[in-house]
Image (cartoon, rainbow, N blue to C red):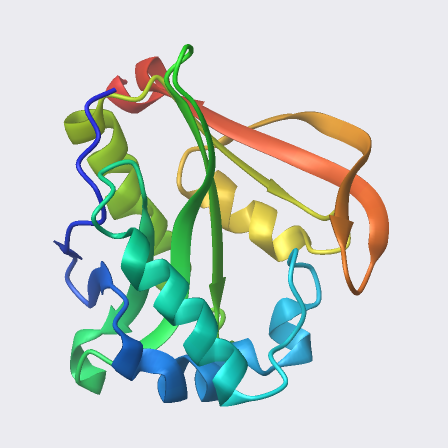
Length: 186
């Protein structure tokens, strides 16, 4: 893989960009403080904007690393304000594989925004970074996340028993989807 880092990407409606420290208020209020948004994620809702600020500081310091990928999802019509995030949560260099994760504020659910963001990242990782495999997983109790994956061309690969842990759900199964470079090229 030829890592490129978290470069700004654009779609018809969205700009995916690196976070800044100034995004703390928007991130906190738009999704990070909402237990409904974080219900199936590996982290709990933030208790204060200070928690969000600390996390953003850690992310911002990692942007110099070209193997680090963490985007703010922003709508062009909403002045580049972050409404969600999408990132690489794991990678395996030997097999050229990266695992993706995403979340978005519930005000923007069911509007095709997450699938639009995921689609541009699929293109970026296959065409620019040179991955062979993109992976995403979700809790079985959150089938809408799987629908986003399927809409973007990911194929269901299986359900791993007791392979996922979240603060809200505890130990759960993990529904795994992937898209390969050969799938993308077709």
